[in-house]
Image (cartoon, rainbow, N blue to C red; front, side, top):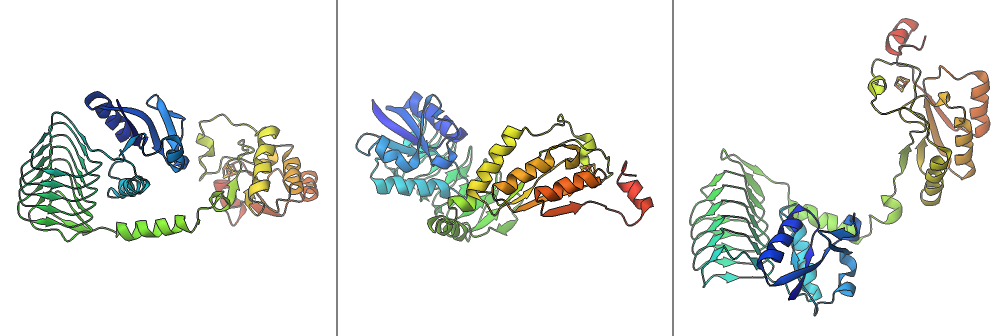
Length: 362
Ligand code: SF4
């Protein structure tokens, strides 16, 4: 049996795995996605491998690949992976369900996924990396270029020219002899009766809306990634809100603390130190809010926690307090621990408004 690696690990990849495994001559040996998106080592009981190392696991002369990524970002994620696989030299067969009808003279490119009940009439052309979902009809003399999705039960009439990266929603109809330019989204149930200009959305009621220029956006994102703007130290957070104490002694009117469902508690010393150690190693300039959803001064050891963070070299530590428990002694401990910033929540201009808002605060 020929071996196939599916690129993707979402619900669409699962569906394609079923189709390919049930109705084709290929055996799916693995899945592959960017390392960042690997959540489990296995997907559908096969290994899920880092796309960055796919050639080490399965060189192009050993397997074929099929990109099973849906229509997100107007199919451009699928396009990107398709082009990478093509560049690496992989064979990229199309999957055609045995119950699809494809006229014998239809030209079909690489890496298409054509599901059951699809009809492609004579003299039509299907490019690369398209998805034709169940019961879609592509009438005669129609051209569908690359990286499009034509959804279930939609109809594309004859002599239509569909560009790249289009999406035709479920039950949509595209009339004959028109052009659908790149990045057109024809909404579910919509009827497109004249050529689209591209980069636009056509809604069911015929209304049109310009789409943000997805291509430009994608180029921008690619550049960002290429220039390593997402390098590790930048992807590590800069601001932390640590839920070290989730008890509170007040019932302020604006606060949802009083309806909190989870059990209140104190963060363990072990967990706290683990978090602080990691921040100190990766982001010593981080801003750390030492409490998040409670009153920190309820905790006897909060000054010790602050002291630990300071010893580890963290300098931007902030304590947000309702101040009702800040006795002279506790305040001195905070100062001795090296607390740089204390933020006091008052929310009132006089005693009367304070007692109404900060309920329980006096
Ligand atoms: S003091 Fe803060 S945490 Fe407590 S109830 Fe008021 S707003 Fe909420």
